[in-house]
Image (tube, rainbow, N blue to C red; front, side):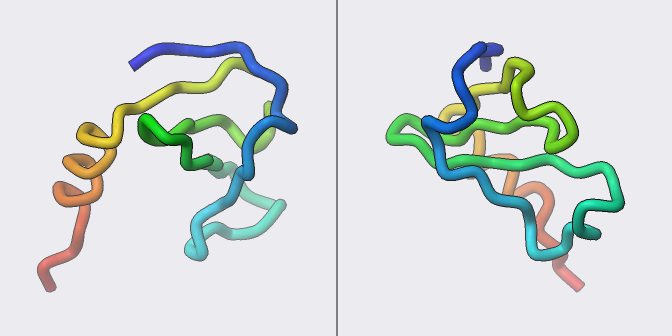
Length: 67
């Protein structure tokens, strides 16, 4: 995982459908060929994290509800 300072316009950023809209703190993600980028939606010009596809899949599997 690394922090990459890149222009925000390069990627198609999105928020979770569970996000509270613009009034709450939130993360945004963008899919890239090697994985996923994650950033603070309140600071889009700041550096973001690059997460490998494998690490992202592991994260999603660990956070899924088994209710």
